[in-house]
Image (cartoon, rainbow, N blue to C red; front, side, top):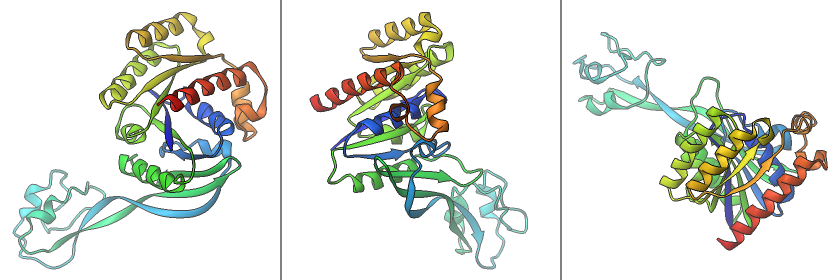
Length: 285
């Protein structure tokens, strides 16, 4: 079984458009949307939910019994979540557990909070695992790990897992790329796009993950696209292809289709070419 993760240094580069297109080309793949902050792959693939799994990603301290009010818990709380009456202000509690650790009377306990849901679904291209956070909750690498673990369970008898990773370089991104065979970074030809591409390539290099680059909307600034090619070459990272700007990408999403399904445009053909490069690289690995 092979695993490829599509990521980007920032949001809005076209990462999910590329991932969805790959899903419609690949055969016998399991799909995993690890961008729990903005899980857009479901907008294209319209998954039918088969199973829902509650995700508990944080905890809050509560006072379970009366105590001598020694105040040790209040002394160690860095978030001012415990008042003079040893009452826990739950919205302020960050769930570190220090108060429970120091309490000599076992008067406090940590209660897990549901912070999201992991879904196991079926799409027209095969099984998909995705997740959504509760309103106001922060993205978590642990949630991404749970999504990927579930995808691996589904992929025991399949050849490939395609992961739509999180943007940026934080914990969710690290959890998205850990242990995969290859990462494809979708970049855009802008000043910020080049900066963010460099950062994300530093992350893949740090974790020893094989990376390649795809330049999306290369023709909106061909000078910056050339900069991306030169920078990638200097870092020993191959550029697998350049995708032209095309409104068909937006039109396809509005129609709940992948670019490949929606149109035989030049954009579709370029994505097919990139997929052939990815597939060849996976087979070599």
